[in-house]
Image 1 (tube, rainbow, N blue to C red):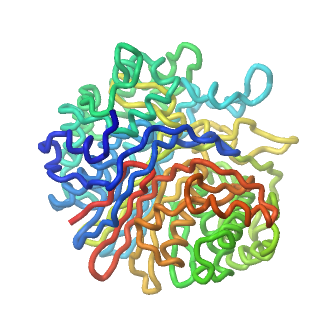
Image 2: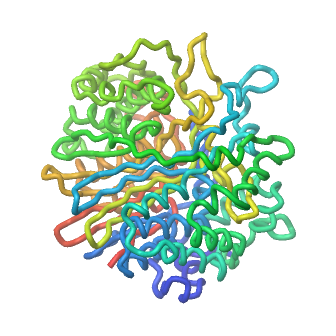
Length: 595
């Protein structure tokens, strides 16, 4: 039996969030399809079809999130007088339940916050950290070679110290208006009363081969016959409700110490075939880092994002700086624009792979990488008639004398939240447990643990040169997550954007910005546009979209073209004189809603 998102959403009792009217798509969720693996990494999450959605509008505030129940939780918090930070806490904790494959308190996140009154942008790093016992050869097998991704990811070896809950608590302490317990209440209620399994969650569970090997996860997600519980099944999680009640009473201390922390350590270190080494000291020592935003001009706009260890904002700045040399508004979506976009991606990824990692462990020429003259010099390497194939890293200003080797790395799934509250404060947060369903470890506290350490490069060196993104104790793995805020020429907030998608996030967000700013698409059209780009490998075009038609023209310019499932999950909100206009990616189940 197939269920539309409208059907599964409205199966749930209205009392949970006063969700009297679900935001209904115009088409059904399709059956799961198996994606063709991208060249540089496994697919972040399998494709489960498209949902046709209408552009959302609101006058006072708006939220956009990857699931209708999570978005409704955020909307109801804003209706109660809450702030963008309050809504983010409620949304993330509900996502932990309804979209457990992508994010949760067992993972990490990056957050941008715009304070409309103070006119201040703050960026917070809640990325996971490697345990104190971690060593550079963590993912080298007995044969002396890097492990297969599947062998590394499942089990305790891949689990990093989670940061999401500490990040939420920090954001609430700074900008929250409602009591901490009140913003946790929607997720507690949903965990206790239950929620219907969505078509996407069912599809991903059905295609998953490792999760059912974990006894707790098997009992929660699968039936006695070993099959994923059907769409519409009401799923309850009293263990998670109990965890959240303890956190509501004692804050993040209830997670980073005490029985929850002890269980995390036992779950990680007790894995039968692939144990990890997180300790109680690792959990107690975790800290959020406030970092300087990475901002740059694009035509009349100012684009701001998260700095290293995220590579997202730097790579997007480089891509947009190269694209700024072309009249994209005149070109419009098509093969010519895709050629320039792919070449810009090649150049940005070449620099990303060589220079970017945790800034506490390596000197990063950050100002040089986003220097406009340097980026324009890189743009000069692009031929209008021929693809460069594979780009080499440049020599940015302020580069230290370091002997480094490049790394592609492996990065996977995520979720994104965009919010603007009634006071004009905005929040863009990209959040993850890395691969779909993380390390496939469920704690007694009712949440899954991340496999974030596989975002490090598996080989610590190449040809005797160290790799910047190698494993080291206490280090944060490089990320491509790119929560983004856009400001107009007068410094006013204009857009809140972000996406899941592993290392493809960079291209997803960059092409959405081009669609919004150059092609003047409304947010729903912009997020639904076919994906395209390059991560310094083949040029990737999304199957079954308008981008697929550009294949022959790109091949005529020398591009090696791959047609892929590209499962973005972009959430975009534009601020207008009348209020807000929003869009949620039809490739996932999310909605943009507000009042």
